[in-house]
Amino acid sequence: MKKTLFIVIFLVSGITIVNAQYYSNLNFSLNDSLLVVKNTEDNSVKLRVLGNIGGRYIWSQGDTAIKYFKLAEEIAIASKDELSLYKIYGNISNTYTFTLGNYPLGLHIATEQLRLGNKLNLNDSLMRRVYYNLTFSYAHLENKDLAFKYIVLSWPFSRRNLTTYRSDLSNLAKAYYILGQYDTAYYYNKLLLDYVIKNRVYEKRPCNVYVVQGDIYRALKKYDSAIINYKLSIPLALISSLHKDYLESSSGLTSTYAALNQVDSAIYYGNQVVTYSKKFTFTEGLLNAYKVLYKMYKVKNKQDSSFKYLELSQQLSEQLYNNSKTNEAQNIALGEETKAKELAEQKAEQQKQLIATIIALLMIAIGIYVNGKRRQKNKIRKIEEDRKNNELAAARDLQISMLPKQLPYRADLDIATFIRSSTEVGGDYYDFFPQPDGLLFTVCGDATGHGVASGMMVSVTKAGLNGINAVKPNKILKRLNAVVKRIDLGIMRMSLNVVEFGTDEIALSSAAMPPIYLYTAKDGQVEEFMNNGLPLGGLRDEDFVLESRKFGVGDVLVQLSDGLPEAPNKLGEMYDYDRLKNLIQSSCHLSAQEIIDILIKSVDEWLQGQSNPDDITLVVTKKI
Image 1 (cartoon, rainbow, N blue to C red):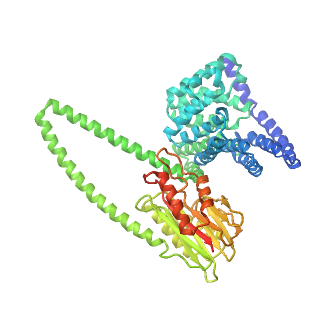
Image 2: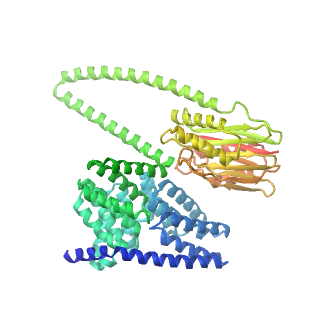
Image 3: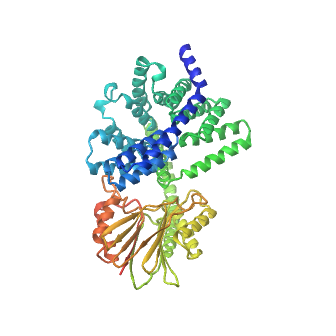
């Protein structure tokens, strides 16, 4: 024990030296690597070098890693190197999920990776990369069924042993930890921990096995054991330059000391996370540190510091805002509430049965009393349901009134639209704004969630668009973003794209919407426009990308919400963006309305009679 403590103290004392050496080597390697990329015409060399650069940053500076992986993605797409693109998607998903904490975006990229892997018919060894990413994306988003499905694919039961998957056992344990299966997580991580303690000197042990062990002990409220494991992991993380693991350990210590009400220690490690995060990235740990520091300074009655970290945590939460994650959390909360009500009702029923077996007459009296209460409750519930239905009907009428009463007329354009809400009041919206000079603006949007709140966001958007002068689409989005942000509807956001139709040219810009599809009759190809900013109402000074294209006779532009491409069939499989793109390409010789009819028929067949959980909106414009 004394020897281990000596090693820990010695290694911690050398943190500054280790970091300085790492940065020196990293900068030198980066400059040399970028020169190689600049001076070679061999795309395979560029991809290998950019992948190595991204790999150096993936556990330390997530945004920088994404930057270089995105450069590699562009080269892989241009050179049609789909196997390299598959691996790049894996690295991007990994960075978003583990380092940047953007789980929905990590899941989106992993889904693209899975689609590509299935297309290439890759072997099990290569497909484990995407199964691994899907496991952790779904686990963090609390979709347990799909997370467990990909756990089995990533780590088959028959091969969960030290001989075959030694390096992966800690990740397997981490997955079970995130899903709340602490006993199973402890089993696999302890299996690996016992091995490395027996066969490796301390300095050569993997730090993540101690990090996961600390997490498990903290979840089991064995705080002393958690602290020991976190502190054992810190020097190992610094030796290996795994800065994300250092931040993860420090964040774990912050929460552990807070749970023990050791305020000064919690503040110390929380400040370590905040300071270290100025150079290195672990967003989840930084957000946790902000929240704990807010509470600890509040305990110490230091209101200025407490408010500072409360504000920082709110800002970081807003930066990480994502509809999918919010909706997932809401669904989980609703499920837990329903489960609690069911358990309460079962308990009440058991108590009634027990009373019935003891005193029959008392059971009759209680039955009469409960029956009267139930009737009264049902009567109150019926009144409340009628009131809500009336409000929803009014909200539905309001939303319908927000849509155009008729389609605009322009002699050279064939326009058709379609909208189908998944609930009484949906969050989708489309509109047209003809201009005196002949220009036509079309918009297609999707508000957060459904119901009355989303109808309110549509109303705000409609009003804001009517109050904005006819400038370029990206400027319209920027001004409208300022309007929505100023009104401040809490977590509500609005995704929207705007297209300007000139005589023979279009200009378009998008805020967090699905791709806009442009079919060019001249070459018979469909182009996807993927340049997206954040949803309206997110960051105050967000800029949006503007793109322009020629728009000639026979060309078709399709704007849509995500309800169609992400519609699930009975197996939970998405309709898919590629399927949609191919169907658009094969049907653009038809009229705008016929194109919509084909798309809706196809997605209805895919749904197999079940209702779609999201709204479907289409705006199709064809040059005639």
